[in-house]
Image (cartoon, rainbow, N blue to C red):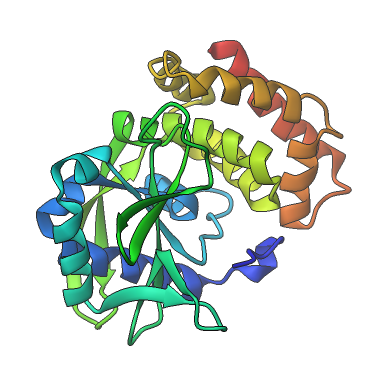
Amino acid sequence: MTKPRTAEGYTEDQLERVRATCLHLASVLGDLLDETAVVGGLVPSLLVGAREVERAHVGTTDLDLALELALLETGRYQALSARLRAGGFEPDKTAEGRVVRQRWRHHEAGATIDFLMPPVTADARGGTLQNLEADLAAVVTPGLRLAFRDRELVPLEGRTLQGERLTRTVPVCGPGAFVILKALAFRDRGENKDAYDLFYVLRHCGASVENLAARTRTLLDDTEAPRAIGYLEDDFAEIDSTGPVRAAGFLGVVDDEAFRADVVGLVARYLRAL
């Protein structure tokens, strides 16, 4: 599904729907939630929470859920699919009726979950599918194991897709891993939203960008981390580099050189602190 290229394509209602999907999923998975992590566009709003910032994160249109390799190794993916079905989810389908195994949809609410998993082997290609069951798969995502090394437990309160009031603690990809994963994602697909998400987390997560860099340093032994840092150095080097230009484009301020300079300066501070 194509994501909006600007902030105007995101609404508070969409964000609340994804939060409700996250809460509903937490109520369905139970103890299996310990072998997952929320990743993707919902992460910044969960990590920053209700803190007062100059502009709240725009949110997301879908929920991305990382699955630990242990689910595959222990066979607990069978319990995962059983609980998903019991909770009203089923494999999604395209308009032409083709089953999309890596994305499941709630059959009443229409909300979707995309599943991701770290590579099982060193030669597994990013973007391919890791089969779990005949109608359940996860997108192979290099670097995703870092979401489990740097993971935060975030309290989330609201309503499920069925309107039930619920409070759960949800495992969420931490900011150190998020920056690495987003840097990789931005290089792979060049989306405006990825550049914006990177900027937002560097600006608002942690006491300072140096504090966030210190958290990232604990992850630099991973083979994907140096590659991601190299991408940040290249893609956010100057005010006319792709990173700041596309972050500005997402917010509709592409001609604002001061904003683009702010993005470059923030990334530079982060890189120096590493």
